[in-house]
Length: 133
Image 1: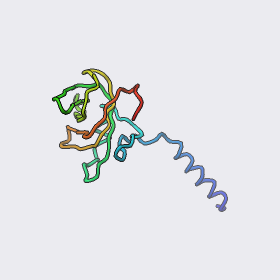
Image 2: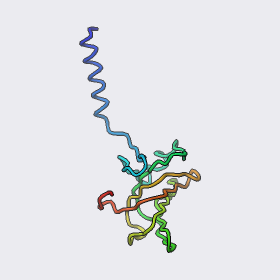
Image 3: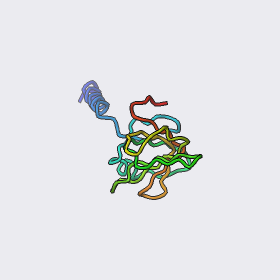
Image 4: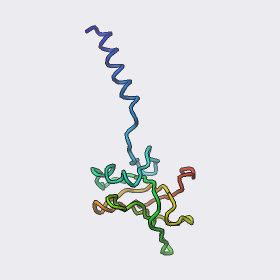
């Protein structure tokens, strides 16, 4: 095969790869917005090989609130948790008048104390229609 034909074939293959759908990656460097927000039914699959490391990494998920609690200092917002989805807890400073059942997006520092429980701390919560900060 000529050098030109080889370059043409390789160029076509690389172009085809770049046109594929982007990978679903709900993780990002600290304080950066992930390119994808997981949904509750995707959380287990998208986090299955992600260990909690020494370096902070942020995770983002969108779903209906199952828990809204404020203890006077910290706010706890819980999403997901309907089997087989792991529970996701957002630790933040205010509830912003969010209510159980309301769909929100939470993003924060990822840790996984066990396979069925994810904690995002620190965490920010917003309604999907609100602009990301």
